[in-house]
Image (cartoon, rainbow, N blue to C red; front, side, top):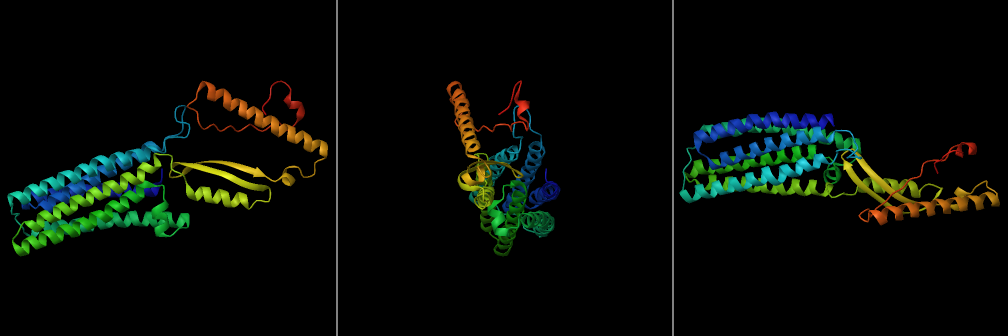
Amino acid sequence: MSHGSTKAVITAIIGNSIVTTAKFIGFSLSGSSALLAEAVHSLADTANQCLLYLGLKRSSRKADVHHHFGYGQEQYFWNLISAVTIFFLGCVYTVMHAVGQLQQEHQPEISWIPFSIIGLAFLVEGFSFSVALREFLSQCRNEEKTFREYFFSTSDPTTLAVLIEDSVAMLGLVVALIGIGLSMWTGSAIFDGIAAIAIGLLMGGLAFFLASTNRKYLLNYSDDDVNAVATRLWTADAQVQAVPLVNSIVLSPKETLLMAEVELREEAMFADMSEAEIEQAIHFMRKLNAIRRSLEEDVAKVAPEAKHIFIEFASPPDKPDDLKGGTQI
């Protein structure tokens, strides 16, 4: 589990808990729809980050008999659950409440309270954002990528989620400040309601973005960077003739399963070998391929759902005498 990601999440949880409480108190005193929308937004952020932390903890478990590649993808699962429930429901509730307030022509009691709450929220959200931004930039440097490259290619949804949420949170505060300020200046509650609807739609957009980001990693998403590195290194190797197939699956932000088909050059395989030895080697390789096909067909007949079978033979013993009495190929 990434220490930096955990720090960013815990900082966001503490900060949003404080801000959520302050915003609900401010709403109860002022009746501002925009402030209620911001309170719901912060509550959704807090709940989401609790699920992010849960995902971090559970995804760090070791592989076991039922999960041979570990639990890394559980991080994406909890992030997806959070996006499609918390933020979507927060969006729907906020917009419906704001529309209802507009229809009733509710006039909030605008005073210094909403502005002081927004000021406090800016300080707390700004600090949380700075922690997430520092961690994200650190990851950019470790991967030797620009901010933009890493933003669109990272398989770590946690730090990215906190960074995006804090950015949207501060944008929501600006919208709330403008809406409440215009309502105070004009004496009309319309601007307060419109600001609340805009904040709700921001939550909806955030829900869609987070859901889309995490969904792809639950669908065996390919690690294009690893594919490119493997292809580049192998094609540059003097022993390799061609690399016709390179496949990968992102298992977690730190783990990728890589599968490839590599064609070797004959001169690399048979260098310093006599014709008799080359003939034996070719016979041996054909025998291996025949055994592999036979093993794959045996499984496919009994378990036809096994569409992709990858078999790697264990290395033979160093001494021919060790082959007696039961052997690995």
